[in-house]
Image (tube, rainbow, N blue to C red; front, side):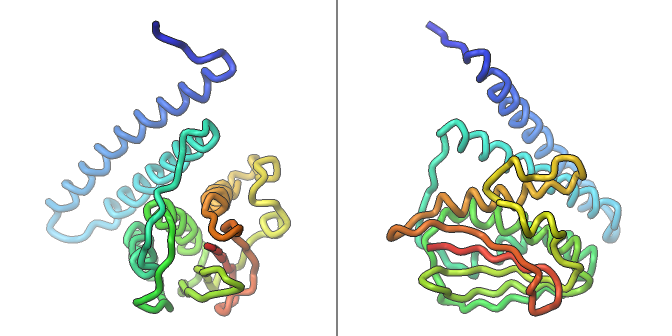
Length: 227
């Protein structure tokens, strides 16, 4: 016998299905944009911008689907030993259009032999979301630096922009009630990264994130801590 969701579960289920359909259509649109760009005699700023914006929407839809699965207890991490520099370059690759469009100086400080245990696609996508924000609001330089702090591997993304607004710095990034749904600058991307970090656990420690305006470049600084 076919079962149907309860009324209070119906909207999230329908929303997730709709998001999945939109994501599939957007993937087709992205491929058409890339094919069109390949037929051009030279680079097209308009097509590059279109491809970037479509990819950004696609990334946001992916976050929504993951968060739905987390909320429905249908999500689990696929942990493996990963090269941190590979994770960083995957995040950079996802944002290459934006850094190229804005001529950003993107610097990386990470040893080639640094490893961590994490869900590779989840962490690379999470870092790409933060990097997107840094590339949008920086003036000319973004730094990605990897260190170890108190038994955690930390990945910092720093910029030379104006820094995080005050309401971001004081908000609990794990509490959706503290997100600013009115201004349009919600912090939802940071919430997603914070939730994904918290799902990573090792030796009694949970991953987490911190944000401040203490970047060595003078702007915002995001730090991901992985146990």
